[in-house]
Image (cartoon, rainbow, N blue to C red):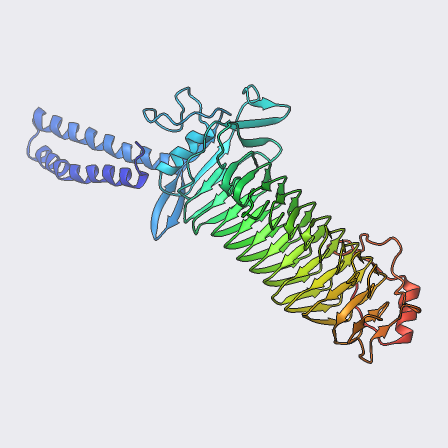
Length: 513
């Protein structure tokens, strides 16, 4: 049984206090009598008091050397550090003090059990020898035969690196890898989480209102069977940084979110979301809450709706690349909520049979600012398909997209929504049907260049430049197409000579990087 260090210290201090009256009496006896018995009693009491005091000092030294102090709710709570030294999967032996599976090894499972038993924010680290049977070619693998205990207390699990430590399911019975039930904070770093199989959150399930931080990790090969969130399911607050979410699946007919399912607040930074899939919607990411994506690559994901991202909440995407995602509708993004995309590139996304190769705007306000949509493909709205709701496009380039169906709109197709465009280039797109660049009604805020304006209405501002099917305008973009031009994502640039030519013809001011 683990005893709180603060309680132990108080108990020892009280013993010292209890000794004080007897110590004072011994001093009085020593003054009144020079006899041997009085001196002996004084001596024995002094020795006893010294022993107790020494015990207090030893206890305090133990606290300082082996425990870290945390402040929670105004109380001092001490956190333990458990060092995992085996890839074994044994439970903690309750009859042995500390983390021990009964074979003098501290396993990950035993460490979690100890951390759950002890109040305070504990740490789990790893120091497994290369002689361990789970070590091979530079990597330690912890094979789980059954579900780990839920993480019911605040906890830090710090691995040596995602390529050096793998925690995976090794059982025909499906279960998730980490189940976060605490309302506190859990930090996971430096490990790979793989092979989880549950109805939801097969890799990590943050099921309460707690905070989950994942850094320098990989979540790969997890599967939600008929549920939600093959890689991660979040109900609370989650932050994933510098991590890879790949090859996770959701296979149910009513489920969603192959890589990530969010019903809370989620921040994704400096990461990759790739090759995840959903049988329904949200191959890479499914969002019903608040989602912030920054400096991330989302690629090769697939679903019926929203191959890369399905957004039904509020999503902000900044400095991010979405490429080669695909679905039946909304190859890159399907949004029915609030969406803001800034300084980002959508390229090579496509749909099979339906609309919105890059973006399908089903409803809700959508803002696209300083973005590039290139090489996306669908039956209608190769770059963007606007169904209903409002879309605002500013300082963006929509070029090289295509539509194969009768409704056309290779660059953008507006079905029945409201689409406003300012300081943007929509040119060099293609379509089998009408409007290779744009088809439908638009609201121009000026300073646009539309290559072929035959099937688009509304680009009539004094500062707009528009071409026709017989005389299309060429914006003279870099024939190398997408490349690194110094921004956060790959973009398309003007030839310098062409830029001067455009400026000479009109006060055109697209903010293209």
